[in-house]
Length: 310
Length: 310
Image (cartoon, rainbow over all chains, first blue to last red; front, side, top):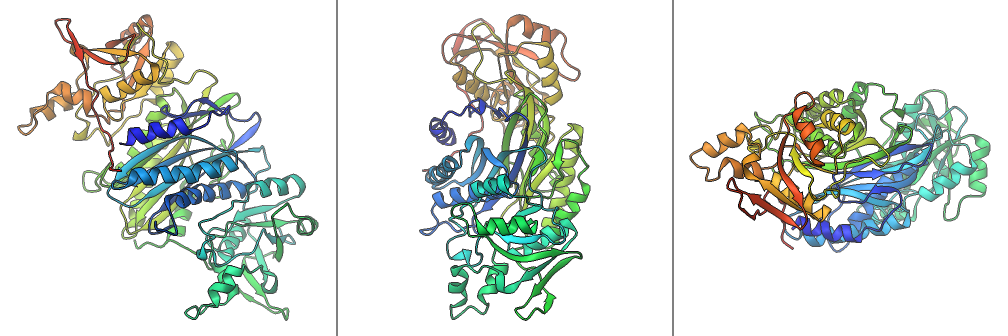
């Protein structure tokens, strides 16, 4: 029964001073940190689209990923994670075990990031598993990283190598929350976005929002070993660089930073981070690729776009 | 394309001073009202479970309902609605038209309640329509209505007649937000819950949370004309009262109030509200029904429970 699962769940939620009303009421009541903004993001994961339940992807992994993609959005705003609410559509058959696994995955990552589970909505149906998490964070007034602030001469930094996440990293997402807060504390960042749909596609979104162009130095784009492994498969016709620019689900951050800040970040990054400068912002629009010989050509943004017919 | 829909959507979102960063970034940045708590609730509606798309239920109605059930949760906390984020799984075929209809329904009710659409997540798949809305409200510290505060001798008030909502009212939900704020400004309310799953079931949840028992005066339970109409059907074997106690999706509020406050509310209700006193709280647990002759018997809570097998 749903109510039994919810009761089970409520007993497992640790008390949190940020909650004025404990979980289980009609809504959660949060004490917002004094003087800070409230940052809100929501992401829905659907079975068969974002994951396929099975031995390689148990419910725990789905719970982890569902929270991680939301935390990655908070990281891209330099916001501190505070609380989440979780809505699920559970398959009627086996839904109870799935729900418990989901909660395990969510609770572990939530504890790691100091996030409190504040409420939710549990449903059952004959359809596939759907999980929507909404994350609430906080940030000081006026300092959230936006995607529309990139300026000519900013250097483009990516916080780690990209590509080939489908080999497993797309599930074991490590959202860059702590790293983002560490960067925000030390450096100026003009614009930020997380790499969810593809490095080139997400970069193009930053440029469109900022009204600027990006020149991507192809030789400097950090290629993940998974992109190399994927490209080495006999049935794969794309290069490691293609995978790096287009695969997505890397959940690294792309940052547009003043040159001195970008260089300082790369020279002395936060623990566990391997950031790389891979391009520069200039006046104009769209993306350009600069080859090793210095020539440039237009770079088509590629990545994961959900299409539907009208 | 999803991106075209999102662009279309972003152009339609009115500017709002509560948003520090306009919609379309990785997350929304809200300016929380000074000194107030942040109230968060989430609800997921699934095609085939909560609605059936068709001539009687176009996407506009789904959008309206998806927002209304969230606003009803805020009303049950006496919270003022502030902002929403919307996550959708759209059927790949026809998803664009559905998305625009959803937005129409959401935008109209949002405008009516002064809520700003702060962000979202738009997805397409081969499955049914799923809509998750997360609503953010605000309330002064310490005054949110909880469900666990009912005390012996409190009178039980329901803000309007219940039952038979399946005849159409379950779609045309009018969340009691304004009415809740008006009541909170004038009266003491010890506990509140909205009637989503069934008057008796939701009342039993309030009593379980409060550690108290409710005596329901069967003759005083306000029966909606839709409950009468439903019971009058030749294939219906339940009484109007049965429908009123068990049908759910009424989205009225049940309030536990000191007797003088309850009587004052019923004598002089906010505009448009027809509240009724239908019972009393006493020490103990569970629900009792009091018949016209004064005798009492246990009342089994009934309503809509999502069950799934283990």
